[in-house]
Length: 284
Ligand code: R5P
Image 1 (cartoon, rainbow, N blue to C red):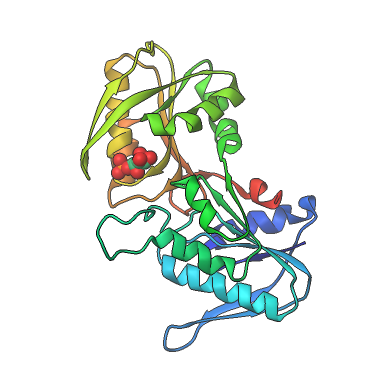
Image 2 (cartoon, helix red, strand yellow):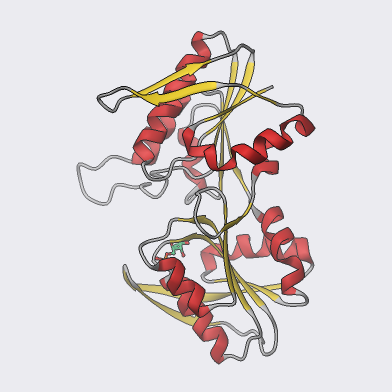
């Protein structure tokens, strides 16, 4: 099985190259550059029948998406028969409904387009897993729980795993179960794009280390609020983790100041992307 890295996965390249052999995979060389007018150019420099194309789609997400389509076309042209797309962070995944007449369901458009070339689609912690139905082939939502549990297990000790809202409860539960720890959640209500109201549920955190687990950190408002409440409740160390670090300006600093450690996975490269999902990807 060949592994192809798009430019949205270059931050994983070193680790992928080092570990590919352990998973019976071989990295296939591709040339990726831009034409003078800014359009993307890709060229597959090898052969094979099956390939896993790894391409995360963060800013500039549209370029990453186009590249993923071009790689799909180039691999088919080169005779590849079975293609898996691994898109650790899928752009447009939050545009999953029509809120004003005339809008598209953008995630559907993206998934359908990928389905032209790819037989299978793998993403991590998709905003709305139901939207996987829009992909015409096999589509799987992967959990980062193993990697998160490995990273924070020792630091957390006999602590607690917490979801900042009920929607994130399954995520917190998955990490907690791997570590054999308790889990709980906060009731969260969004008042405005930058303000959230949070109510603690019945849980004793005094003196306990707490890991708050969410899918995305954007402004950091959710995590800061949860961390402040936990401090007032007498928690020990407070760690926060999210799958996707879609950080708005200043968010890393804001969250870091409020907690003992902030870490996210490497679906998007950021200064705090300390948790690698490469091994989960190479298993596919
Ligand atoms: C919302 O439902 C998500 O799970 C996250 O809690 C949210 O996107 C975090 O956003 P922010 O960092 O801006 O509070």
